Each structure stands twice: as C-alpha cells, then as structure tokens.
Image 1 (cartoon, helix red, strand yellow):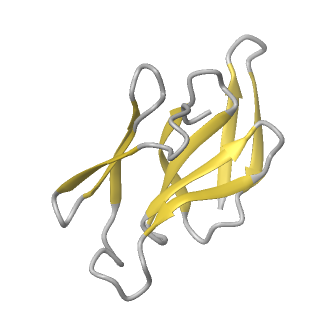
Image 2 (spheres, rainbow, N blue to C red; image 1 turned 180 degrees about the vertical axis):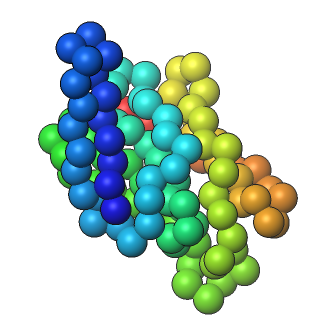
Image 3 (cartoon, helix red, strand yellow; image 1 turned 180 degrees about the horizontal axis):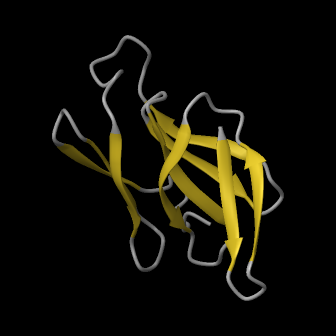
Length: 107
C-alpha cells in the first residue's frame, strides 16, 4: 500500500509503495528521524519500520494462526529516550513494551 511523506517546510509530499498488503496506520517518528514506525490497518498485526534509505523492516508481527492473528495493532509510541517501543492489540486489550537486547534506542 502507500506511505505519504509530507514536507511542511517546502509544502510538498512524496508517495511510495510499502510492499505490505495493507495501509500504514498509526505512525511514530523515531527520535532522530532515521526511522518511521507504523502499524498496518487490516494486514498482519505488528509494527514495521522504514528507514531514511527507503528500506522496510518488521519490528514484530503476530504469528499466523496464533492468538493475535486477525487482531489490530494500536497505540504505537516511543518513550522520550526511544529505548522503549509500545504497542497494543486492540481486541485482546493488551499493551506491550519492547526494548532492544543491546539496550540502545529504537533509531
């Protein structure tokens, strides 16, 4: 689907295909702007990231056929120091906190 990037300084925008089957939803920008984190609306529940070079990565996703498959990922947020990523599953009513094994920020 499509990801729109707006530049309010120049009043322009860019559109690109994400390669995911559903539309990006609930976007969070990393502390230093290197990554845009987003959920998918109607696709595989999880959080995905796009870096400044245009590469896409899966941060986490539901296991196909698992208990959260078919749920919707909501509430994506980063802590002020970007060392914690938060997201929830709407139907299950749970909030998850993620940290990196190396202790670094999500950037």
